[in-house]
Length: 413
Image 1 (cartoon, rainbow, N blue to C red):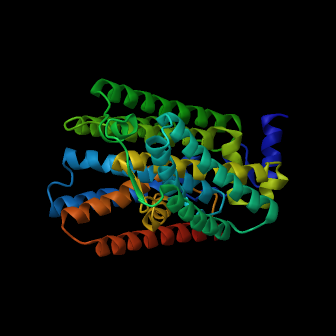
Image 2: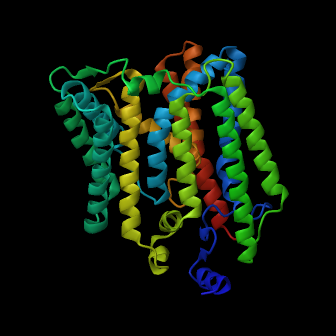
Image 3: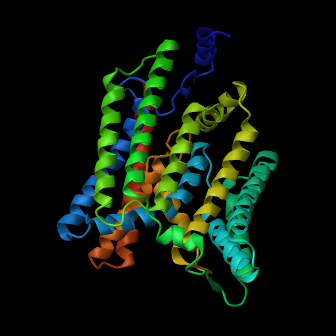
């Protein structure tokens, strides 16, 4: 079937042959092509980050110090990995309330398997992540086969995983990981060499530019509105310059943490899957309009199953990294704060609660906003109650912006 014929069928079904379903972040912006979604979803968050940084820096000059920013990246990595899974579930219009409990259970499995049972650490990590994926497979089966709402399934899963976590940890309720283990060293002490960090910046910038260049030519080939050359070169240059500046500044202290680099790599890989694979188009199609996606031939059940499994596997991986960061697993690991923080970070980062709209990079932006608030208020010696209030206000603003944006798109002009 030719590109033009495919485009005609896609138009009839409400689908864009390059981007996916019509309405996925569409706006009546002057900027053509796929940049509109990112412009609406990410720029307000970036602006909020800048405002937060300036405000906290004005009250405490240590906020933008290289030492504090290195700590901020390490703290954001654990939350961000869990948030990345939440982003995927939200993209299909569902929710997972158990990510914190799954991460806590995974941390318990790693600690008990490695310390008490004598498993090799790599096998304990794999077992924890596999357990997380199995939990997601159970959610997917119940949702797709029996039609149980994801809210109810994952709420039940939260309770089950908390119970299993307590059971696995046993009477002590807390297990310490050896500081000399590679998991603890990786999470706390391993930083990229400056040359490696700069090389990764170059790779990321080139990959970003190539992806946008290819996307532009695909839109031209499909006879769709496409951004101009400046819309490819300018953002690529800004990204490269920004990353180089940040990397240089972090290298004035300890540098870029290996755990944070892994987190960014996961986000980049997920972004590539969402934008350049049939699976990614399926996820966005299902989240935009599940019935239209089914009629267009997407495997809706498999999409739901894969997304739930990816979400809980990433939650488990986040729990493993958390255990390494704290060098321990206890009954408080992955508590209720983790659920709320991960879901809030995904929404604050620009992922819609209504499905079909968002980006893997929402996990990075949202995690930075959440931890910037926490770090800034800590430096100002304000208690946790203020942090909850401020985070709640920011979350409410993010949801309001999303709702208003959708209403504007839906309202004919």
